[in-house]
Image (cartoon, rainbow, N blue to C red; front, side, top):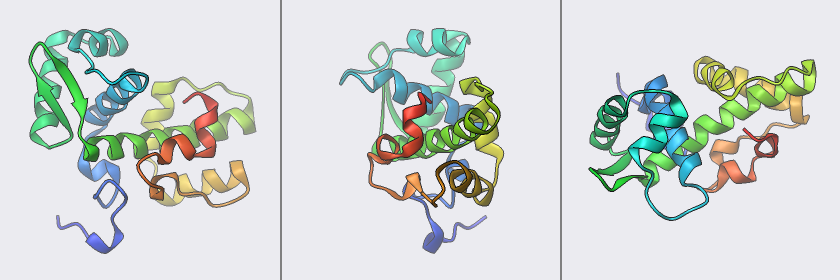
Length: 160
């Protein structure tokens, strides 16, 4: 399937889900969150603990994501996101936050992170945009902002 480059998101894909499957995206988001407050690499064990999966599964996914150019992986040294991987992770996080914020504000339901991620991953772009409008009263495309887009997104304050 060819990507219409005129309609690409910041991550360089027609949408972040075109760059990575749901599980791969969850790993990218996890690596970004674990590495946010520091400059060093994220280790396999940290991701394994956070996601509750075997270290061998983490290593296998890291190799797949590295082959796709989304992160740099060095055995025993850990991983770091590439610029492209960071953009994909930021877009996926913004989608998750739109979902969690909507449910939190409209229903009082404190949706778990992973559930918000899964819903945000599968919802079409139009649905995510409508959630943003319903929550914020304005259209806000967090993914269209520069590389710090997620941090500038109004939904980032919901501890997504």
